[in-house]
Image 1 (cartoon, rainbow, N blue to C red):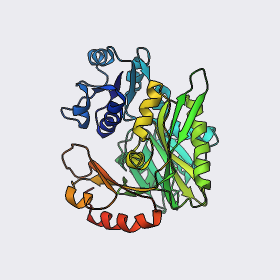
Image 2 (cartoon, rainbow, N blue to C red):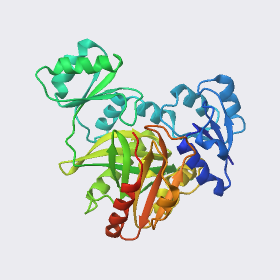
Image 3 (cartoon, helix red, strand yellow):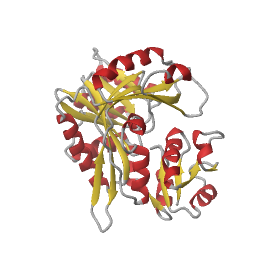
Length: 374
């Protein structure tokens, strides 16, 4: 069984590592000269929208997927006509446009903060009137790990502040979102597949609590400390199931939420395997990567049950001393084969234990020893 992956980054690498034991072979479409997935399969080194490269990529493929959400939608549509692509191009198109994403969530009854689109100077005053300050101005498209956005504080001239930020972002179409004074950030990673004979099957990993530094994910923790009674997890699963069904989604999806005033506000959709789900490699019966491939290729899903408690730390900008990490009981080190560079995710470490309370001390000790150069 040969699976094509659009993108050869660390997520593509981890898909390959999960699929090879299942007898899968991989082909990656990747324009970069070097990529983390290079040792896991054949590389078609070409731009994502190159017709000749796409023909070579699609040849004799049974299934295809993608590892990041900025794949050109036209590329996804082209592939859909020739191979079994999952997730579908509609999910990709929604996730690429923050206004469309927020509108869809709102229309499905999934709570979001107030927002307004800005495509011209003339729309700024109405957007400020609707959203107010403090707020966050983000580009409608692209941008990740805190890039492509400005936080706007309350001041004497809100419209002028928004216009200044809009110009700083290049006068491209933007979304103005109300700033949420959240208590925690969480994500729900889930998977959906179509059952043989009709219908769909959903599965969910534990609600994950996340901590960011400089807009980059630093730490993910399971079980989520903010969800002691399980009610937030139940609500998140309800929201994400509704979203997946509406999209007729196949594969792994992650939805990031703010926890605010005891409930959830949806922030972003990621139509792919997700950084906050990396803990599942070592901390769950079936990882997000394996279940994504199972869903994409029509295989039965594996159990998403957690083995116990897990804490995952991203390694950003610098590589750690491997012996220091692995001397910690319950530590699992994952390096992506990338050279160190400020702001670059070069790996992650997951700590696992049966007892959440006992894990905290170990996690604090390890965190103090890990490099961070963002």
